[in-house]
Image (tube, rainbow, N blue to C red; front, side, top):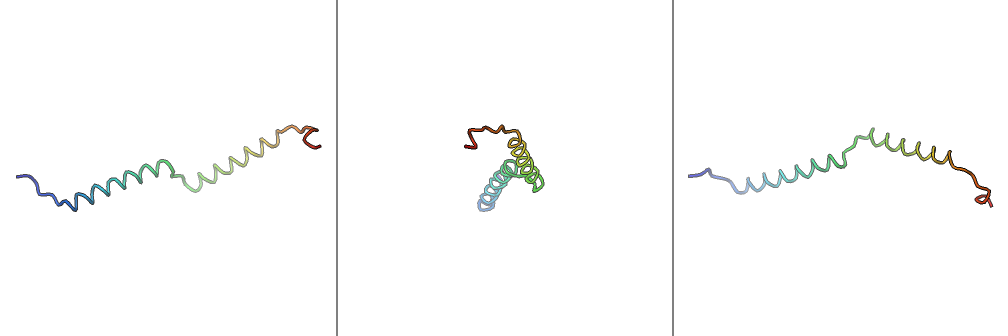
Length: 63
């Protein structure tokens, strides 16, 4: 005879593993620390300031 399997427990284990796999994928895709988010935002602002500082002024735009 084979091993006796509790179907309820097997179903719950299968669902738990599926949730864990989804959570792991989300951690990889979206998981950034607060410091990483702040650094990215600061870099974005700095890049925008540098871009604006290098713009050329046209006399046509002032009119």
